[in-house]
Image (cartoon, rainbow, N blue to C red; front, side, top):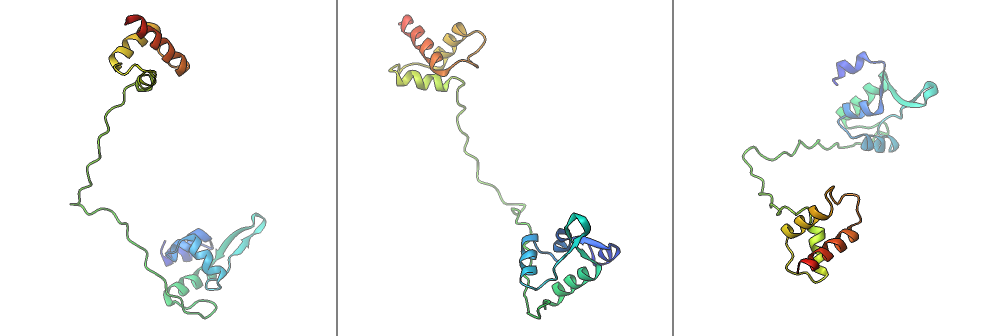
Length: 155
């Protein structure tokens, strides 16, 4: 918002005044507590802090001159520009993780029970036979037990 646009408004919120001064709201409040900027007034019964026109102009003057209400000199840092990657810069390639099988937890559980040679394909076939509606909603331990017993019968 420009100075001309702000003069058309009778009052502004703290956030709007901080943005006009090119400061974050937290830094702006910090400078208000230090006495650099004027304190906002309360907005009637809502108790919302606002700045009226003469306070807004004073804040912009302080930002432009660098001399606060308490007559201290304050140096404002420039805002950093967005630090986007340059147009020609390449990002490092993202490591492609191998797709984990739907039945990876089952296979892991079966391997921990001593079935070292079990494969995803075997587990998938037995699960399709034992649980035609799928294993969602079933306890993982019970599913592992049922598949383990079915594999033992096949051996």
